[in-house]
Length: 134
Image 1 (cartoon, rainbow, N blue to C red):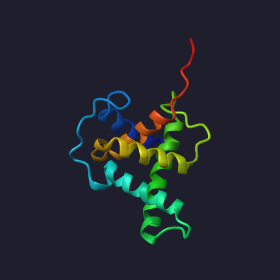
Image 2 (image 1 turned 90 degrees about the vertical axis):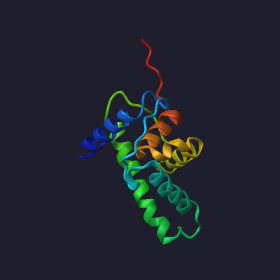
Image 3 (image 1 turned 45 degrees about the vertical axis):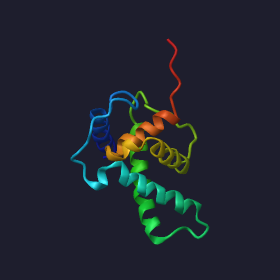
């Protein structure tokens, strides 16, 4: 199921992005929960929850679960295809979510794109795979 879901995400990503971070096309018909702004908001809540001494607010905890579920689904799907688009090594989920939030702060135009676009671009940028030697 995750492979089918990831294939759909990858197809959307391929339609929305030409190259790694260039040539974006607009995505005007996305629902609120399909936009990068929604995932960005959920993942900001995740960071607040990770950093809170008391575990965070109930609202942040609910959003945290949505961020983690989506991030893990994309991550698992991306690692099941070859060649890989990114190579995170031993990076934790928490670190990868922080990388995503930081990337989105630097690339706010992606907030209006499909939520997978910014997530995958952030990871490609932060975790490039070594080039194979021929």
